[in-house]
Image (cartoon, rainbow, N blue to C red; front, side, top):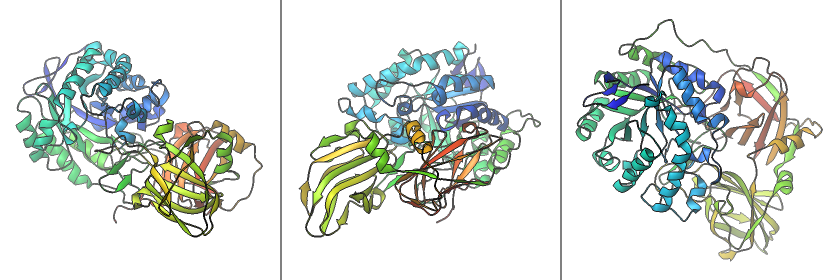
Length: 589
């Protein structure tokens, strides 16, 4: 067992000065069978610490569930960090941002007495207490003074950019201490005077988040943290992408120059991200600073270790810099990865989404459209329906659409409304009569700012020619477990379809003897979701920039792999194409 403390000038490990050289690696964005590989490559680059957030909403999909199994086995992840001889920094939030759905806050949280999040509101803090108590058996015995790897715990996350409730921060500190956490606590904020003051307490050690102008940022941080070690605990070495924008990259030499400036100043650092990983399933977040912008499936982040675990030019440049400040074994370097495989798989079994809905729907009735949160459905897809009868051409309008609504009349598509285009109205055909059905996609909950926790679905009232239209039904589209869907597809005879007319589920199978990673090309598809062997890879969108989906090798078996695609619009080829290289899209507008 060791002791880790914060001294007047340095972090102290058993009383000796210690510099933290950390890299961000989120266990929930990486297949668990690849955790050890990514951790080892962090050490091989010259890092001595792994930092991770904890995603409350992933562990607690409902109030009565707290899952620590499989890809959510935080204890196993931390044990692998320790096995590699590294330390750990844990950031349990409860808010994490991280370009993650709802900033890590569970959707159900907002229906529990309307808590005021990220504040000293007693309803909110009661729920936070329960969350931290559920984490305690994982974190407490893995602290460094108990023989584990954890050396620091972060309180909240960039709180100075959101609020200034000092009582809230004090109560968070108290809660974390009460569950048994004894290691030092830190906070992080951008090095702006107001943020640094509002986001911390005199009793907490302040750290900074920035990606450039390191000397100036550290000087500002020092003004607000006059004693103790300086630390950039989020050194931004890349950025995240939005659908419809470009793939972000940063100049390798410029990033390496800033890293050296941090280290030359004697500061500690956490490379954000060392390895970004993937927003699997429906986990991506979104920004909304006037325009709604959902984050793409890839969280590659232009990190030193790319999404597939391959060292990049940035990895080797950082390794060279780090080698000037720590001892490296020059023979211990990552092994070369195998090149990808290129092949095609026919999608030869289909079920229209409507058939699946008819077999699985559970309808909720309301006068005005209910939000999906109202029926306890917090991600993915839902269908609204109502009967209409018009005489002339009419305009259907909603107060707000969150986030994308495909509108069907008697199951014929008549238009699509997108939140990012601010579309809330469309024209109905003349004499429109029958069943109106609206397939709504939650494209990711806002993870930053005042729109945290907003409800999803059709919000407010619906109107036809300005007159309120009532009597609605709402059903979630159940996709958390696609095993029954897979069985129904597998039982169908194979066809030789040349294209896919959505919304439709399509299935194919393939063998993959070496179980290496794959890259799924989506160029021929428009908009949808993909599963392989029951695991949801995430979203694709013809708007880009991302053009391939990463398929972790551990998902695959030598024979009989199953791919299911939900194509919402149209695919020009009923084929799944795997290509040799990842394509995250264009880097300029």
